Length: 476
Length: 137
Image 1 (cartoon, each protein chain N blue to C red):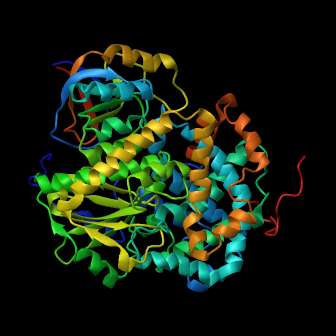
Image 2: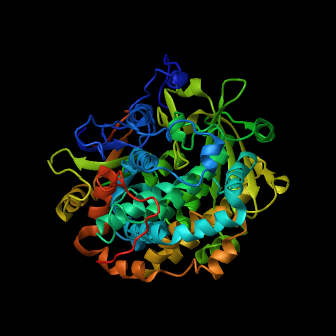
């Protein structure tokens, strides 16, 4: 481990009201704030966005606010601006990763963005009609007493940030919609997102960035049942290596099963324990039954998810800041928290709906039985993926986004089958099917859309006087 | 000891692996390297900062990676930390002015790095909090 001798943890200062947090990157954001000071990342960026908001939607909102069916134009625009900054905040550096060499990710992403914006509104409305607005809050609240659940930060965030934010941004860039088109549908998507997240957090905020990058959602008594299973780990010991190796290997498979996207990973926390250590709860979804390519994971007998409890010693790390961001990923300064892990526990959830009482703990000494299965499934899935043609890779990836991002919510609402059968969820809309041929022209997927998304220039605001009922009526 | 290239350091570590740089262009190159049994003799050089391409190499214990794009927040940056495998990202040659810029870089940039580093024996220095270094060994 690199030396932290003489340095003390001061991460708790980040939670003091006047603290502006560290900067994790040198870049700054402009978006729709042309002519104003650029916005930085992190806690300070969140403060600036809240100061510039015209409404109170970025402050703590009440349950009644969440249950109300309609945002105002100011609220829609404040959410649009905040999500655009938040997307930049969590993804601008990741997005420098370039081509995959294996999966055409930019291509499948942009198709999924647009597909979601077109198709999700009626499916989300049908789901809200089925369970009621309170029912959507309740779906969010299930995450407070579960592990191995895809009702998590990244999925919930994606509803608004990806389906609304990036979907609308992509269609505006393609010039097939205008800024005041689909306002009613935008409201439908954002209300669904707000309700799920409000029900999950129950502190009035919806995003982790609004709360200094904390996602402390689990009920204390539930959390205690997890902590009770934690085994001590000494950094550098064989047992520590066994635990961290398993964490890394399962995370690798979770990314691959989800086509190199973050939907395979779900962190919550950090939870401070009585002894001052920090707990991160991590779900690694290594076998999603909705994907046909996951058959190789079935063959190895892998569960839907492994969940890991990671106990981090902030003093050992000399921790300056810890963020659990809105795509469910933990980042720290210093960066290498792996060697500050001093305790761990592992759980297995067989299916997405396996009751919590049947979620099985796995002793760290027994991980040797699980690791080879994870590694074998990984190699088989790689070999399978390497043989796929470009079109199959793009449409498979598209499904990972377009279906998986709302899959957990529809499953819990009991509307997934209806969405498949009556709303043809797994069909590709003709408009999007045709965009397949447009997105590779003139660098649309690899240059135009990323530039619009990460400069923030593509998230055009709705007009002040726009009609909240407006859909799209003209194709001229 | 000459510093051949620098880039983002994915995570801080005292590990300083050395080996012959092997440029991997296609998934088949990755599979062939695994099958050769010589994975741990090489520092892997790849173009992207994503994980899928290098999946088998990560799984089988690659000792170090250099990428030509991506950042610690990219999936490969995250996984390199999880595997505790030193990784220098968006590396540029210290002898060249060419730099990676999203959406504004041509093939020549990648080709120059691959041709310069492939086959060289190097050591990775990832002790700094932000800069990772590729040093001639």
